[in-house]
Length: 77
Image 1 (cartoon, rainbow, N blue to C red):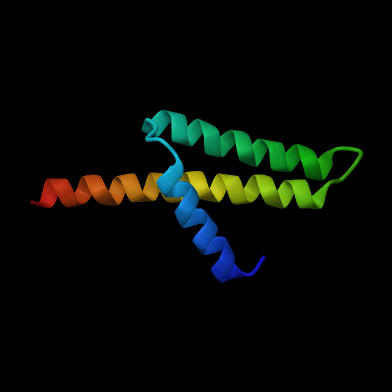
Image 2 (image 1 turned 90 degrees about the horizontal axis):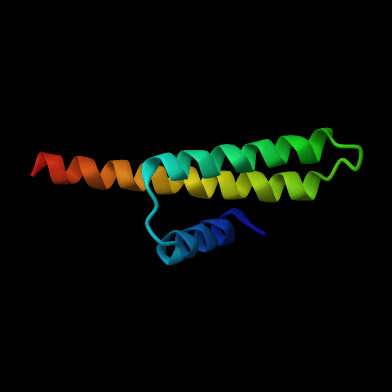
């Protein structure tokens, strides 16, 4: 998947995902990073799975950023 395609998929997933609380998003991102680490350090060494988990973690972090940006815009008004 090309970077532009990943960005489009990420944007679609961000819109389709229901709103989560900030702690839930942080926990979800951390869980995906932990899963990626296990995939890399497990006996099977699954790099594809690790990349998929890291992509999911990035999606969570983008959602966190979007929420922070949105809340800052509300405060500035």
